[in-house]
Amino acid sequence: MKKRRDTDKAHAAVGDMPAHKDQAMTDCIFCKIARGEIPAKKVYEDDEILGFHDINPQASVHFMLIPKKHIASLADAGVDDAPVLGRMLAMSGRLAREQGSAEGFRAIINTGRIGRQDVMHLHMHIIGGAQPLGRMLPASHG
Image 1 (tube, one colour):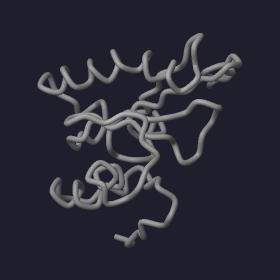
Image 2 (spheres, one colour):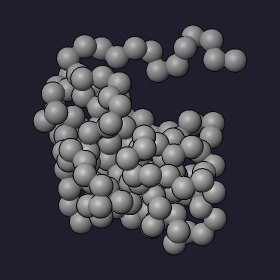
Image 3 (cartoon, helix red, strand yellow):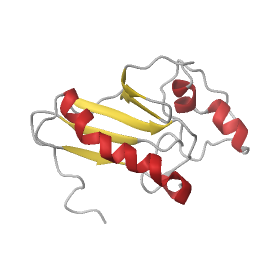
Image 4 (spheres, one colour):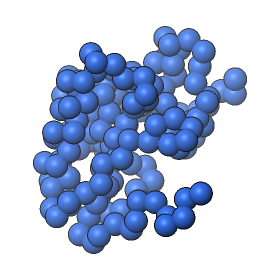
C-alpha cells in the first residue's frame, strides 16, 4: 500500500483501507483529527462527536460531523452506534444555524464506492448558507 503524508489532500481513495481494523484507526485521517494529531477548524466537540469545517467547502456553510469512534461507513454502523448517530442528526440543525445557515441545510452521508465516500470514516456533511443549494442529483442519473 502506498504511504500517505498527512499534508496530502485529506481524502483517501475508496478501497484504500488498511486490511486490519487497528491499522485503519491508526492511519485514518479523521481518527487523527479526532485525536488532535492533525489540526482542524472545529465547530463542535464532545466526548463522542467532533464537528469541523470541510477542507474543500462546496457552499458558504460546509462542515462535517464525525463520531470519534472509528466506524468505516454508515453500512458498517450497528445498533450500538444508533445513540451517537442520532445525536449527530439532532445537533445538526443548531450547528448549521450557528454557522450561518438559518433557513435550512443539506445533511449528506456518502457511503461506500457507489455513494462516493472519500474517507473511510463515517462522516456527515452539513451544507448550506444564505442561498438555496443546487439539485442533489442531476435529472438523468443513468
